[in-house]
Image (tube, rainbow, N blue to C red; front, top):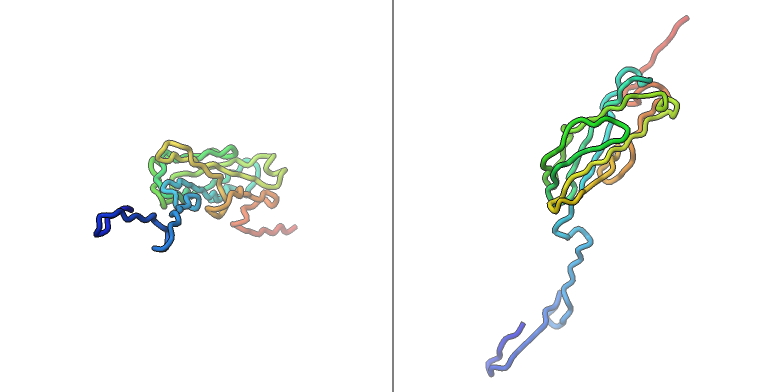
Length: 171
């Protein structure tokens, strides 16, 4: 800043970040989330139902919770999944800080390979567009927005672990 004293002499000072007696520069760290554009998305994939008893030919139905975890709106949000058939979408606009748990579902038909492996491992990818038309993606997690663990269904007992049952055969 430059000004004039009463004798018309220039008086100057450099700005400081925290004191009137120093001339330190002000530094703004844009790597810690203060960047004005921080697009981010997450998806949680959970098992909704398993038809039948969880054997060959039965269907696993999945639900998705998509969250815009960034600070800018996302458009054209889609889900892809290599091990299930996805229905629903796209979400035209997912505002910053909002979520959606009704647009997408997916199904997987249990086959012999799933039974032989003892489980069905499944992971989806969510993709949206930021305001600059860049892709913003995330791998699904089974229970949290900050992780990328696949959703796993145990097929060793032929039953959905969230729906326990018992049977008795008397001879």
